[in-house]
Length: 124
Length: 124
Length: 124
Length: 124
Image (cartoon, rainbow over the protein chains, first blue to last red):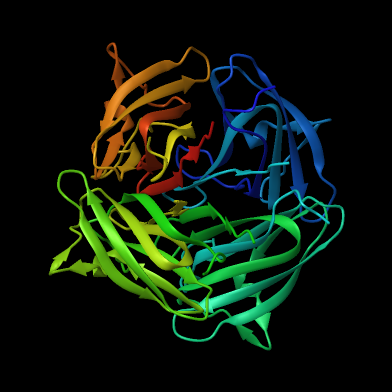
């Protein structure tokens, strides 16, 4: 039983991959996770959309004593990816407690915009 | 009784619809909500102002297993909308637990600015 | 006794008034507060610095059923204000529970940057 | 025993020092801490990477009744610093309860981007 070092269930309601970029920096989002345990965490990411059924439980690993900044554009389930330009939400479930933050970089217009928030932890 | 998957009462103190935009992206705010339940959530949004009585309990729906990115400029009660350029606050009440995040895009000046925060959950 | 609708004690560790602005928008910070009660809240704001004693308990009012977006540059105690260009921290104490969010607009360089976070509630 | 005025253990999953800057403002991150107690807090910062062992327990002090906006680029352990351009995570442990917020300024592209979030408090 692991009871410390975070939570096993996190929600990020505001997901969005900006379809355009300018300059050197690519518009993108990252789900930033920290696993403070010595062993790897097996996590699953579910993507909820506004107008269709969710992409459920995409498996990922967060290694022990490691940070993982996961680009949402890299997530894939049965050949399906998160489309750019579509509002969606993110659910992260992990077998070990982890800590989850969400950040977005948007370079659609000249210059650069950033936003970030801690995920919202769900407790049983 | 639903006890999991979020909270039924959320507050966002910093609401503001930027009145100007530049470039392709329109300045706007979104209340981003996720309903992890199988059935729809009936929610109500109350808008508090600095100098007059609130617009109370504008009804909205957050569908089951769906994300809802709601633009604040679309909210309307008896023909009244949230005016642009005015500081205000947001209260979200829902019959089912949901998770609420708030984000703003401001393109008033060339380039782009983003900000985001999880809503603040109120517990009884 | 009021037990609901927020917290009576909030902290914002990252305060900073950008000394420069470009374009139409003035660089500024706001402490955004919502009082959901029917009666006014009497609050006090304490400003902590890196290298000197705090400015303690500047009185402000958050009216009942009203939003209050307070510019930090307007705070004053015995003729002393928060200087621009200096890192500091903010403490908000209120006799009634309120909800507190912090936002900053920085237009030091062409374009615009925003950041926001919910305050951190302290419980007794 | 100190039980109030914050938490003794905080996590920031999304750390990143932007390697480039434009204009007058240097890209940087700050760990912003407030110690509301009368005595100094002894804190330790651990840096987790994606592909190697953490830099563990870099000692810092947060003075009593003082704000501390600590630039992550100033952290050093046995001559090793946090490299720019590398995703990482931050853990803050303190002997006294403090409050921790994280902010990043990115001026890689013309203009300016800001992001901020409260740290995530870990409770035993």
